[in-house]
Image (cartoon, rainbow, N blue to C red; front, side, top):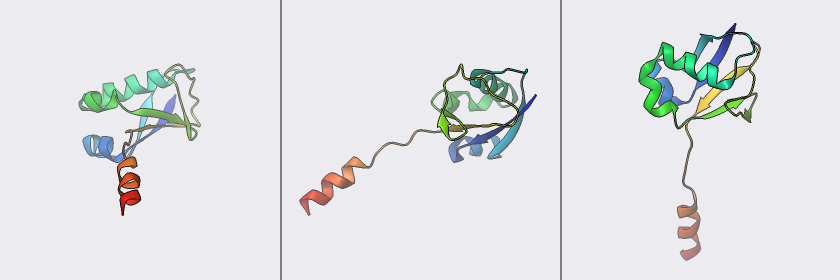
Length: 91
């Protein structure tokens, strides 16, 4: 089956596209989608290992089953924010 994949900006810079289609077997898992994505673009490997997977707007585990009508997103985690809040307390 064909599964839609959405990539964060950092990953899309590597592939040249923010959205892709990958082919996986029926009853594929998020891990299967990740492997299919790596097979089509091996250059993603260093960053994709840190990406957070999402299905239907919710965090997804590698063992979650994916259907053809769902989009799997791989997003890079974002950190920070607390530093600015601390700074404002002192102003």
